[in-house]
Image (cartoon, rainbow, N blue to C red):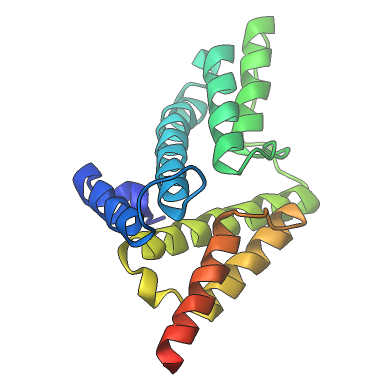
Length: 185
């Protein structure tokens, strides 16, 4: 998944700074502030998921409760406060950590029922699209299209049942509308 968090910090900072200048300066709730927040949340989630995911795959008996809680917190923050769903990497880590504390052996490659897998896939589709659109909003805000914003909105609704007011999908919709207006001038 490619996103703004993959760019070098100085490049991301410059993009966010440029957006802030376009908005007339930084302020709480601004697009630039939200972009910075999302970049940080995404980086934190990716770091925790990489560390804990690797342990889940190679040495599940070493996953600790603290690591599972950290991953759960980071995933929830990256998903705008929504709790990770059953079957997500965070919930898997919590199950494994709890079993480790009780001295049980856990098989992490257990099959997921189709409804749970569908939910996991919808969340992954949203996270992937949000990463792409967030990167584009930061690097090429004038190039965000209505189609991309609609697709992100759709994926967020499918994943979580609704879109968050002021969230990434909402910001993308607003930017795409502005861009459509700019191209008609």
